[in-house]
Each structure stands twice: as C-alpha cells, then as structure tokens.
Image (cartoon, rainbow, N blue to C red; front, top):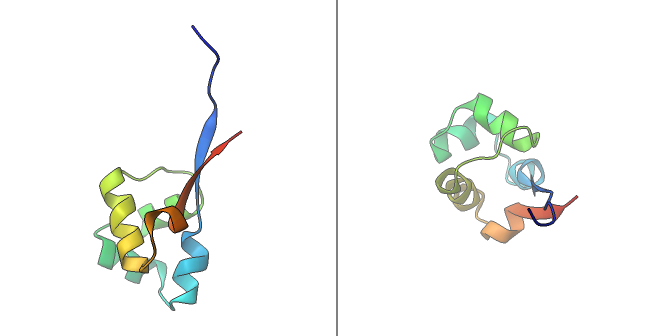
Length: 73
C-alpha cells in the first residue's frame, strides 16, 4: 500500500457547551444522544456519526468546522 495516513478527529464541544451554559445531559437531550455518548465524544474517545456531529454543532449554534476538526498526527 501507499503511505499510511494517521489522524484523529478533535473537538471543542466542552468549551462551546460550557460557554452556552449547557450541561452534558442538556446537550445530549437536544442532540438526540445519551449523556454517555456526549461524554465519550467530548473526551475524544468516540467519533460520532456524521448525523450526530451535525446535530451537536446545530445545538451548540456553531458552524461544524468550529466544533470538529481533523488533525494529522
């Protein structure tokens, strides 16, 4: 194969969520996810589906690119 591309999805959910006074539970409820899922996504341990990622950005009132980014490691 060719060169291996390594990277990861990072996010600013916690910063944006706290700036808006939302708890993890409130964000989860509004985005249609469980609190456990939001905790894992915030911690970078779980990558959400594209649909959930866009719902999280919408609830946070931020452009997708302001919430999620892809970083080359």
